[in-house]
Length: 257
Image 1 (tube, helix red, strand yellow):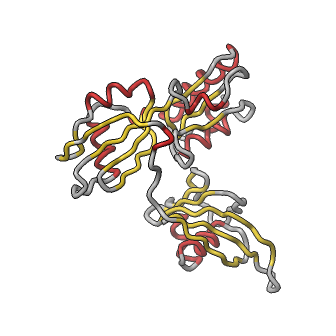
Image 2 (tube, helix red, strand yellow; image 1 turned 60 degrees about the vertical axis):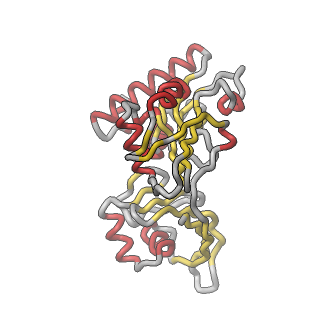
């Protein structure tokens, strides 16, 4: 079966069977098909499962990592997704800013309130507030039941998607040269480590490319690909600029801090 080619566990098989049925049925009936929130890994595997289906991945914010896979029939424009009847709602939780709450605090409180992870998108924490995305169906429940994070009281309100603060990071542009576009070479260049150390990190299963874990340091990375290293951050291979006089490859990386 097609699902067995992408599933890596029993949980994967259950999830992708459900996604496959929902999206293919939507196409057959010419109706919208919207999934739960998916991780970058799940999004990439779904693309491999349904390469023939034109899907839109929407997470409620232009930089969202967790996103819904959406099949839209011809009569429905993509702008519907961001509208008041679209599948994603945004919540702002305000709190006493001296209480230094974290992503983990909010995720734990959401799960503790009986809210399933698949119904929650990205969570963006800043001083005194946290914006997070949820499926529209559970919005009323969230507003009524998420009263605190840890011991900190929260004041919740729905906000428009365009008001979501987004991730709180800075982007640093790095220009370097590498012998090849191998994953270990790019991880070494981006995170300032020797290629051997980068290879160890990859072999330990701590590096992903476009959401999928990769254990092969010799994997050739394509321009535009996202590289994530656990505990270190994220890189994007923004541009491959050609070869230098010493026959090395000039690259531009974006490092998210």
